[in-house]
Amino acid sequence: DAKTTQPPSMDCAEGRAANLPCNHSTISGNEYVYWYRQIHSQGPQYIIHGLKNNETNEMASLIITEDRKSSTLILPHATLRDTAVYYCIVRVGRDDKIIFGKGTRLHILP
Amino acid sequence: DTAVSQTPKYLVTQMGNDKSIKCEQNLGHDTMYWYKQDSKKFLKIMFSYNNKELIINETVPNRFSPKSPDKAHLNLHINSLELGDSAVYFCASSQGRQSTEQYFGPGTRLTVT
Image (cartoon, rainbow over all chains, first blue to last red; front, top):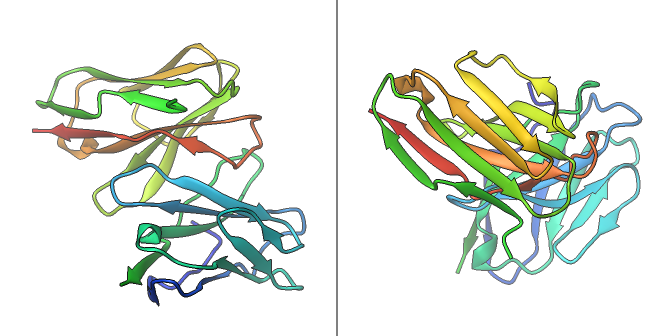
């Protein structure tokens, strides 16, 4: 089972910031939070990851709360091409596998 | 420049047949994976190889046999195909067995009739 909880779907207007929440209340101190997305009919795409500090790259920003029990992925200026299922993942176990949950289906509205 | 490629993209076959899906990565990664995405869109890991050594083997029927001839290739052979094997199969690669920054291929849609 995935260790994360995400809303099943969200809408966001094109050009606005999309803020995708994720709860991971049982996260351990050395577990990273990863975000992937899957655009329809394509393979998942890595977006960003973080441990404690906020992170930013060319695709998105990741805000992790101080207690690390939740995080938010921010797409600063959403476009129609950002329509996808977004997965928040906490790596579990010692065998290094990642477990994809149900994710959040993000719809960008024109 | 394709980072992770899979062939074929589509595969339609009858029950009982044996088929293979090939995966190649040109990223220089040392770890490769196979995932299965079923009709409900759940994405589950099947196998993982690090430097040609099997490191993850989930509860997968032994009709599925991965083979890694070298670090850049991980093929999936499926014997005696069943209707329930119909799914999209994704190959992925990463650098290091503990990396969760994985790069996925475009997928192979397998349909068993």
